[in-house]
Length: 291
Image 1 (tube, rainbow, N blue to C red):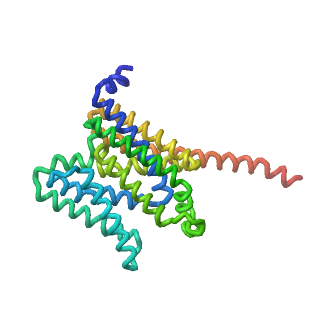
Image 2 (cartoon, rainbow, N blue to C red; image 1 turned 90 degrees about the horizontal axis):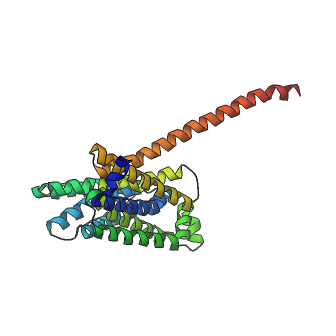
């Protein structure tokens, strides 16, 4: 059992474990709404669109989280402007801003050669370098997301299932959509320091998508998504420790792997059930004919 417990006896691995668990809760709370609302592409675009803000913040010695948040807000505002002032769909606006913001970030980074190492951490994260201040920030972001999810539960549900009826019932779907976007920004900005922008999307969507396969209620889906995130974190840290792999990428990769394993098992079980029902039907059909 030493191989199982020894890694978690190290202080930085303990901090990484707590950070991964907090990120899992945060991403489960927000990711469940993202999956149900169909905002996965927008969430991915936001995570990539933060690069220009982070690059500028780094070069001007400003807090990276502030730069990331400002860049994400600009990204969302640009998507809304394209959708409102043109005949193009929201997906087209997301694609345009996605490429544009990412290209701008790469251009800025290419002008600062010293940024290369920090860019790697930005893209792929470094969960093993999590500090106590990171844990505090993640804890605050998680609590805030939980409070907002509880207070806005009914407007979010109405927005997801029927936006027109939500307006009829007085739930103000536009405001609910803005609040949901704010939660996405909060989750992405709070998590990119731990798992990176390229991998935060995995923890934001994969555990919630896995929970969605079970077809339970929204609250239960959030709990299942949290459990999936926790298991990916624990196993990912163990694999990273013994196989000497990147911890953040390993955790995110396992979260995605969970989805395909559950989806595959569910598909096989469904085929088996249909096969059993078919055999039973064939056995019963002669007696029905004779009767």
